Length: 239
Image 1 (cartoon, rainbow, N blue to C red):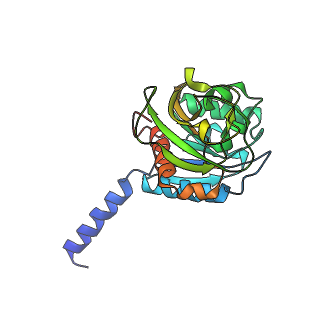
Image 2 (cartoon, rainbow, N blue to C red):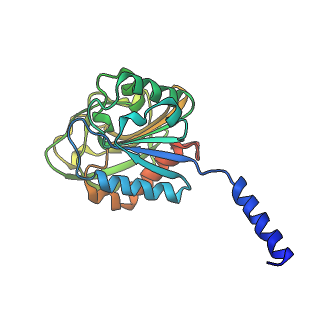
Image 3 (tube, rainbow, N blue to C red):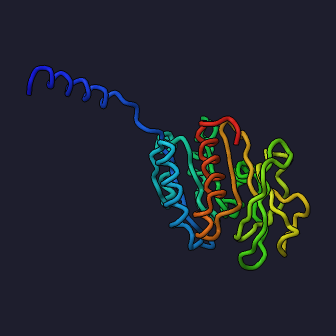
């Protein structure tokens, strides 16, 4: 190797050694209740979105990963169709600390059917699942900005959640669904389906869509998920 080539190789090695490690996202899909068949698709999609956003993604269903030291490695934690009581009190405390230290949370679909015995989590996710009409149904999703419709409604064919309460007073709603286009809605003319908020030092973003694996190929839903990841990771100020 010539002196010039050796010098260039050493310089490149030095750059590589000092390059910052990518920020990380933890995708958590543990279930203690109903388990969605779409979880593998959700995880693969979230991994791909993370890669496109320059985030390194890990997937786990091991609640013992929820320690203060381990969570400190992550910028964002995603609950991907989790269900039931999935963390013990110490693990809950570690996750609360993660958020209070500025961490981001993304909840997908049945993340709202999780942690009913954990009041802090209920406030983080924004609203708990109440029920849903039978089967998959078609409706329109209306994007929203600052409390007003924004942009063209887009069609969705999915399981549409009803919630125990309307979260609007506590969060920034970013999309609603039109109950007049399907049967079994219980929330009336104002039916939020996706929202975000700053919470307890961190950021939280949630979508009720994502039951059916086919939804993860919908470009509108993918754009919604991407915005959620970016918001939770503090890569954009608005969700």
